[in-house]
Length: 331
Ligand code: SAM
Image (tube, rainbow, N blue to C red):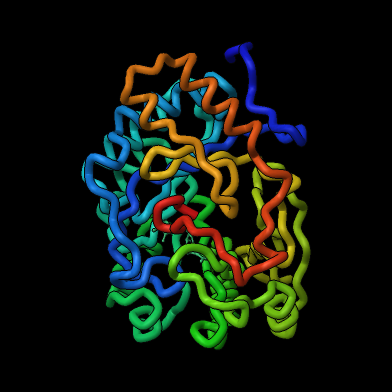
C-alpha cells in the first residue's frame, strides 16, 4: 500500500470510499429523482470518459480509496460499462467494487458484472406492483427489474440490497410487503428516507421518518437489531425475528450519520463532491483535461477532503434543498 498522504478530513474521518456516477442519463423517470423533462442532460463531452474516470480513481487509490461504487443516472445505460467495470475492479488498491442500478438492464449484464468481481448489488425497487412501478418511475419495467433481481439471486450475488425510497402517498401501503421479502429471500431491504434534493424536490410533507415505518414493521414481527459493522455505511440493520434477510433504515434527515461518513463522490460531470447533501464541489475534469499531473489531481482529492463539512444541514431546513441533481451525483 502507498505510504503517502491519506484522505483524512478536518474531523478525523478517514475517507476510503469513492462513489462514482458514470452518467447522468437514466432510463427511468422516478418522481423523486429525475421526473420527465425536469432535468437537463449533460452533453456527451461534458461527461468524463472511462479513461478519465480510471485515472482519477487510480489517484484516489494511491491516497487510500479502497472501496468504489458505480452509480448514475443509470450506470447500465452507458455503452462499454462491462469493460469499464472490469478495469475498475481490477485496479491495484481497490478491494471492494459494487454497483447501484435500477435493475431494468441488469439481467444481460450479470455475467460480465460477476466476471468483473462484483458481488454486492444495490437495486432500486420502490414497489412490488407493476402498476405502481409505472406511476413512480414513469416506465413500465417492473417485470424486467424483478426478473433481474431473481437472476442475480440465482447467480449468487450477495448481498443484494433492495433500495426502497419511502414516499408518503406513493408506496406507503407496501412497506410491510417489501419488508416481508426478507422471509423468502436473503435480501437486505433498505428503507431510505426521501431527501428533498434538486429540481425534483418536494416539500417537507413528503418526508417520511424512519421511526414511523419501524413502528409499523414491528407489528408484523419483533425486529431484532443487528451489529453495525464499519462496512455497513449509513444503514441501521435489523431483522424480523424469523426472517433470512435483513431490513435496513437509512434516515439521512431524521438520523443523520455524518459522523461516520467515509465517502467522497465523483459526479458524472467530473466534480469531486465531499458531501451528498452539500453543494460545494471541486472541478477535477478541467485540470485533468488541461494536462494536470497525478500529483496535481491528488491535491484536488486532498482539498476535497479538507472542505468536507462536519455534517449536512438539510434536516435543519428541508424546504431549502440542495440545487444539485441526484441523477448526476449518483445518490
Ligand atoms: N439508477 C440507479 C438506481 O436507480 O439505483 C442509481 C442512481 S440512483 C440516483 C441511486 C439511489 O438514489 C437509488 O436508490 C435511488 O432510489 C436513490 N434516490 C434518488 N433520489 C432520491 C431522493 N430524492 N431521496 C432519497 N433517495 C433517492
